[in-house]
Length: 604
Image 1 (cartoon, rainbow, N blue to C red):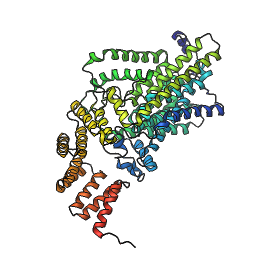
Image 2 (image 1 turned 180 degrees about the vertical axis):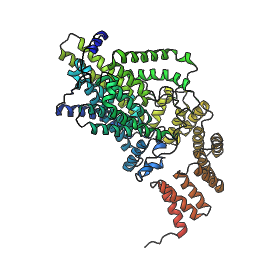
Image 3 (image 1 turned 120 degrees about the vertical axis):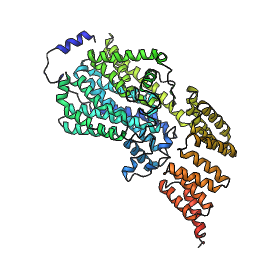
Image 4 (image 1 turned 90 degrees about the horizontal axis):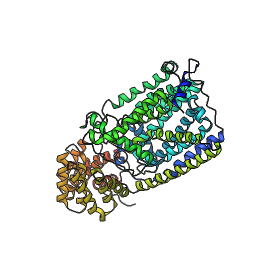
């Protein structure tokens, strides 16, 4: 609609309270249930083949190696996490993993059911937000007649989009999808409070889910701002009226920032995010110009998707001149739209404000990860769908014919996206396939070569030589890559080449004397060569560096048993089982030590 006509409506005399008291006509129950069923079924179809997707990347550190999730009580421990891990400083995310561990241990099916359920619930919430927004006075004349259908199309495309696999199929990135659910629920509860007579109840619900989001991921910090912006754009005529009518809600939501500040105060992930990294805020912002434009391209053409980009830092501003110009144009368009077409400007603000904490000037070790587009993608989808609907409405075809054509096109797009999502999930199901795919698209990525080598080694003995080749590539790309040295040493150990294994473990220890795993790996070689004193020393050092390392207690118990220190060996086995009650190796070795001390039981 022309901006001039829009300004004339703005200047029309109105009551000095709100745009107009919006009314959102209720949907018939059958239509509500049918729309919800479509989203649920779509989520199941897209992610049914993820139930056996194994751990990838940092999943293992947060799940199988994380002793904090082994028990749900006390709940305060279940909400904690190892320092510097993905779940550190994110208690709600950590608690969700503890719930899954209580259900299925380290079997991944329940984790993926949880992720899919969170994604589907987020899609349902998005559908409700879009429908109610299209019934506001600002948009009702253009889209109100087809609001329910347009909301369903937006939610369906968003749920089915392959770009979402980075936050749904990649298990530990549920932090993004859970936060996204809480973010959308915060806005939804806020919208409902405007219509409802039980305003206090909706305020309390909005504050509760906002607080849960703050305990899930830091991007939630922008939610109170987005709620206020939504109100100003769609519900009120001025900022003064907005603050006068909703100050209580905004204060309640802003109070949840205290939770976030308390969680990040200790720098729980200071090695991977924050101003203490080697990259400066300016250089990080320069790199994000290309990253954000890449995200936008993936929103329209989600191929190729890459699990781990290892995005390179641009050498200077000239290297990002083109994407920087494009990004500047989009930012300028958003600012102008907020002034002259606030409804369109809100979508731009949603996109940029939500990406801001990870894709602006605050340095993060990894420049690009696809899961960061989880919520911002909703703005792109809504913008495209509503633009297409407006264009169809401008055609001279019969309204029902235009609507049928639009729904047929939407169904075809959703089907194509769902197929792409299932295909992407098939790649996730095979550890070798996902890392081969990553190496193919990011051959400069040392971490990808290292993880491909690890997947090769886990596949079978016949793949160990190939694993060593991948470790060699990783070390060639990054000569200070501690994990690659450690993993290559393990592979040499499997081949019986203990001298090469020890050389790699020594190199890893020299590069990172504060890492526990190289000491553990070196102790294993010492144990095989019956140098028990050396093994005990290395294992003790490893436990000093990582006191909750159950496997190290088990191995030290074995060493002490062979040194004749039976009581100390039993204590180590007991500690290992306290940390990991399902650790079969510790249980078996403990039984052997018990029989050695007490003598074998006589048969009855």
